[in-house]
Image 1 (cartoon, rainbow, N blue to C red):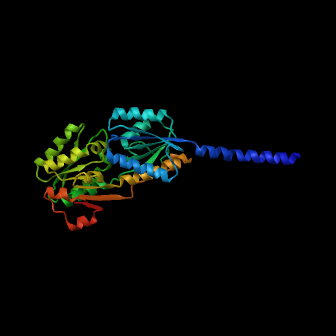
Image 2 (image 1 turned 180 degrees about the vertical axis):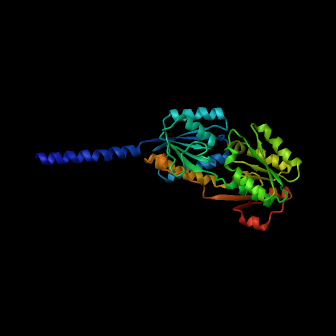
Length: 330
């Protein structure tokens, strides 16, 4: 073999090596962590997670083949959330998917380098997770589940379905929810236009919820806005039952409240957020940095009305409102 041919062959082999290495890199088992704020027994949270897994599978990620998922459930326990966040970070996964603001806060304290994708976070800028929505600038990005104007829509819809409402209370846990300043301007503006008074009712424990709802029942024209909050998620069955027991019209931020008997809900399509989050995880596993993936606001909102609950409360839901709803439960 002549010297030039030998050099050419050697050069070709050297050029081929990076391609082979990249192929092996793409085929290796990738690890992602998932931290859910809910209990493992929560069927709705399980359905969201199923949507996430199905979306990953459609993108070519097969669990047990080229993907391993380390899944943790914190059941709205702040201490457990912090412990599990550290546990996942210590595994050094390729990426972490976190759900709800408290979960992302716990993960953000543990790592500034591992890519994190979120959903069910209302105010990622206010939470200190990203620099801005278009250019997150760090290791965290994802999908918000609300916008500041939605609060005003809750007031308007509650007044429309329960016209006698003259004062509303905001139910939330200050430890687990986004600060009220995020949605309060739109809530107060709408309340003023409808001559409705607004008050805040922070609760720190499950056994404080009944007192808030009972107080609304004692005053004619009382209503309830159940704020986006993982504590309200976890206690949704109790909140719905108490609202029914005391005859208090309430509006919620997600369809799973209305499906369980809540009067009316308006909020983002949560399962869609999980599917979109899988797309960001896919892009990160393929090399995109979170800093280059813009935080996206929800584009699909759902209005759900439970007619059975409305009738039990003595409310006559207009045909116009029913026609605007994405779903009417009878």
